[in-house]
Amino acid sequence: MRSQMISYALLDSTVAPAAWMLDHDTDILDNVTLYRLIGTGVSATRSYWESARAQSAAAGQAPSPVTLPVAFSAFPGETFQAPRNWVQIGYPTLMY
Image (cartoon, rainbow, N blue to C red; front, top):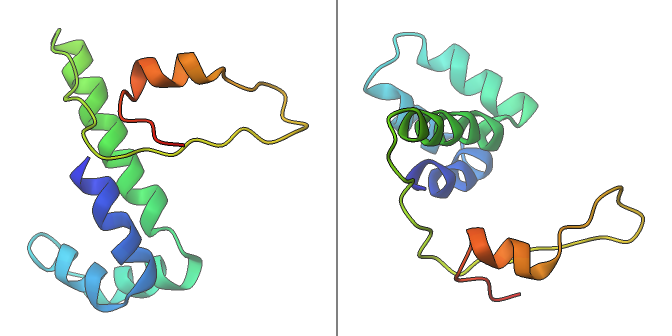
């Protein structure tokens, strides 16, 4: 879940991606520019989060529970609208 939290900073700031990449990346300026210009900070961190969850599942471990308050939206006209009780199974801290 930590990568999801940092994703908002990556999208809103130029300094956040630089700080995040500084430890493991040699082409920081190129990557910061790329993330910033096309707004991919959220999707990039989401892929790390999904990968970690998949690795936990493959190892037979349950993913860590979500402890933050969660909101969920279902919009009219969507092909599939998950029922609230389904969402609450995965996110017990569902507030809205």
